[in-house]
Amino acid sequence: MEADEAHLIGPAASAESYLRIDTLLRVAERAGAEAVHPGYGFLAERAPFSKAVRDAGLTFVGPTPETIAAMGDKTEARQRMQAAGVPIVPGLTEAVEDPEEAMVHAEDIGYPVLLKAAAGGGGKGMRVVATPEDLPGAFEGARREALAAFGDGSVYLERYLDRPRHVEIQVLGDQHGRVVHLGERECSIQRRHQKLVEEAPSPVLSPEEREAMGQAAVRAAEAVDYEGAGTVEFLYQDGEFFFLEMNTRLQVEHPVTELVTGLDLVAWQLRVASGEPLDFAQDDVRLEGHAIECRITSEDAFQGFLPSTGTVRRLDLPSGPGVRWDGGIQEGFDVSLHYDPLLGKLITYAPTRAEAIRRMGRALDELVVVGLETCTAFHARVMDEPDFQAGDLTIRYLEEHPDLADGDADAEVRAAAVTAALLEEAHRQRHQAPRIASGGGGAAPGTMSPWRRSGWPWRAS
Image 1 (cartoon, rainbow, N blue to C red):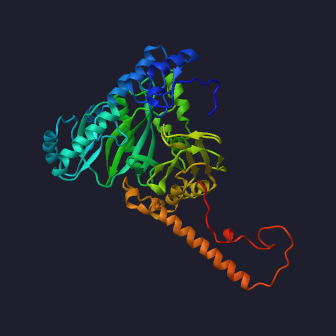
Image 2 (image 1 turned 180 degrees about the horizontal axis):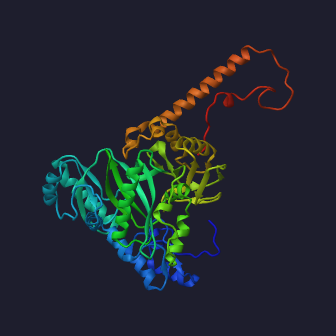
Image 3 (image 1 turned 90 degrees about the vertical axis):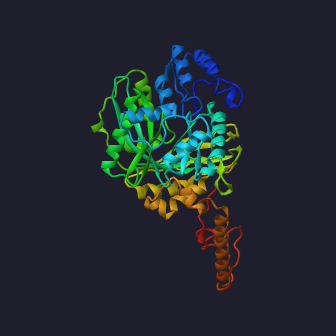
């Protein structure tokens, strides 16, 4: 939101601005920059961008083009992980060419199978196939979507895990061969493979499982000579974990790791990029307390997460001990459909998970965004939901708790609260002595507004 300089890079459409490597390098040269930080998305995991930055004589704040390319191709990544002794989901380590070939391999793997794009992630080019009859159509659909999203229609197959947790390990490597892991994040609450709520540490991993998964992530990073901050993602089910993919960039959810480790990951990205060695070893890493992050997006969760646009007319941010807001908006900011709907990240930290949840509930109550719809009320429901509070999570959490995104439920609660307040007010007026008005409006002296007395947890979003 604040910078010493701002440079126009093109029209709002990302294909004409944020995805133009030539334009970005011209701006870097004009600004006299020495390094380029790729951020979270757009070109952050594109090897050609990393190479172009390096070829221009600038420092790319992230891994080398060779590392990005190796982990960006999902089939090559699976091959490398298998060679490094990292558990992978049973399936192929190479792309399939046509539905007939896919059918043969699916029979060997066993249904249900998962078709996945070889060149990307984020749920694009992904299809769950339950029966042989469904495979040809799913294959063509996955290939078309992968081609449109990544410019590469290659797909491969792996076994479909029905109720896994999504657990990822943060790694940090320097240019001198040292790689450490910084513990795990639980990211199981998702919608269409997009994360909604993240926390650190996971509420279910034992110390032994944490160490095993962490060491597997370190082996994965070492296998591709990783430099900078990265994330190795795993699926965890029934005590087993399997490599999913590696994100060769900083993750949106990195603040929860920062809070439980006390490390500034962005600062360490810059230090590593400048050639500094890590000044701590694996044994120095300690996880203390618990942190939770809610992604606040411009979406109406009660209308199928329908995108919302508009101008932020009012913004009230929560505060207090253990509350952090990493935001990209301010009052007067115009939210359009051109970019990701993420408006900001609300993070809370406390000594225990239960306290972090309660603190998040209060912070969500205090967050006010006027001018467009947000998912704030949805997150408040999640914080109150018993399975979430118990840590009973899988990637099917939202599917198994459809009431969390049910708009009618909110209307019913509001109607019940209003009815109760009106009935109580009518009862009070029937049983009190007449009062002489003393001027002014509002409730009579010594009384409370029926809205306050009803206990209705009014939330603006």
